[in-house]
Length: 185
Ligand code: IMP
Ligand code: MG
Image (cartoon, rainbow, N blue to C red):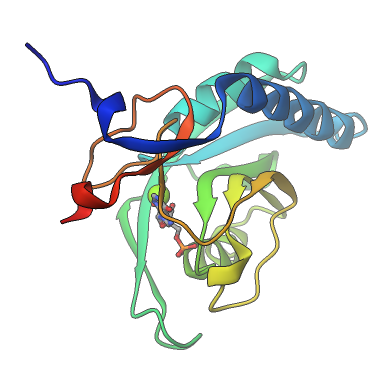
């Protein structure tokens, strides 16, 4: 029989209901900010962690949206200059100036990824780039970065579920949880 991944969870940090409520609030904030914009909204999901969040967020928005995805990672974490952005799946479209871009991210940790990605997208012609993170872990910041929209601020613990993984597992959990210590061993 398939193992139950829920057995590996030490505690539920954020419940399904709490996530739903936060997603609705974030959608209302984004709708409000788009009210007077002439441009179309492009949600740009960062693979793979954002897919569950982005699917729910786009359903809650009243504003019509288009979606796209990028896959990026940052490495060389310790200083601003060494934290380089590595793009493993780039945007093919060249029409970014026509959109208001909201980057959708699962969690902000060091801040390296988004602090590099925002200027990269501006360099590609997007004049309005905002960021929406389901989770923010400010205790881990290495470079200053504040998202425009934040679901929850979380303590300095490794979290999984609702898109977030540990070694590619646990993304399908419907809530945000913390793993049991023995799973890391
Ligand atoms: P950073 O802000 O550049 O350090 O990158 C954040 C990325 O690190 C996220 O998109 C996740 O992929 C990953 N990450 C950071 N903290 C966690 C966590 O607690 N659980 C799962 N993934 C995490
Ligand atoms: Mg990620």
